[in-house]
Length: 456
Image (cartoon, rainbow, N blue to C red; front, top):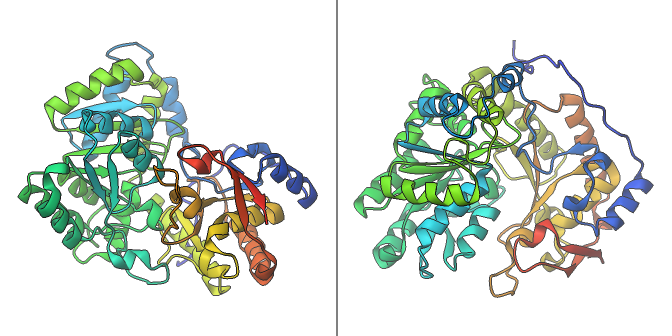
């Protein structure tokens, strides 16, 4: 049989509230055309993010009942720690309430009141970049050149450019405290990083005595792409591939709200004793005691089960196949998307789709607004709105203007996605009627979350 079906049954359902176009036009106006400001009750299909939006399994809900809420030394922590070390045997496991808390702790330690540091990565995501820049340091993207071309169909467009990384380490190595890789590369279209690139990055780090850290939010999806696309891994299990990935790393930051299938949680994992001591000191000040780190015991239990379920091959096959189904349908309609389709989201190349909208008028945001207006579909601009704001207050055009439709795990069925395809087909047919937007108000950083837009 070639048909891929969901490897689960639906046991509980949540009703969706149907709204009209005229109602959604009013909601947009009240939200200042920022989709983050919409009430979720007014959204029909919510593809804003895959973070924290997963449907948990019966085993996870059963685990929640076992959650032990002891302030220190909870058995729930040790179950979580054991589950994580089965995949990523780091010496120190430090839970946090979500990934950005782990980022804040890590970059606060690494900064140590220095303002001349450079943190290279294939591509930093928004909160990672902001947490680095908030310390006065530089977040540098070094994704390979092919990864910047949305239409280029290559298996591992998330790979870091090893030549540019070597040049950086040779010229300014004293200013580089760590090297990072984001797997999969979210801002670059959810593109995976090859095992060979991870291995060579580790070798380069060893040559220059630099620790390698992974932003590993979607590590299981990255591992499954390696299994599908990289020679020598077809007969490996996803768990074995994940274990090899983490064997090359000296530390990791993680939002468990992605590939741990939970609604809240994260962690910082380290091998360095001194960094771990400093991290736990900050953790106690800001998150909580090191065996709960801002989480309840039930959250830790759910993460432990999620870490076992995320490397199941049937789940990963369904996950990657269902996302590809969405992307291939849009490509067939002539809608330009980032190719190949990533694991957690489909990305529309809005700048290419809407060439009549000046990039300074944010074609990605214009398209995202129209998707909600017409179909009640909430998505996320990843382009100049998200990344164009500079620390000095100026604006720089992003390389591309994308609209990300992130797929919550185990939430929507094929008919929901078929509805999205139908909506986007209508938008594409009338795309020349779309107009851009201006930003009428913005905060000093991370403007995409709260800024106000005015239609042209």
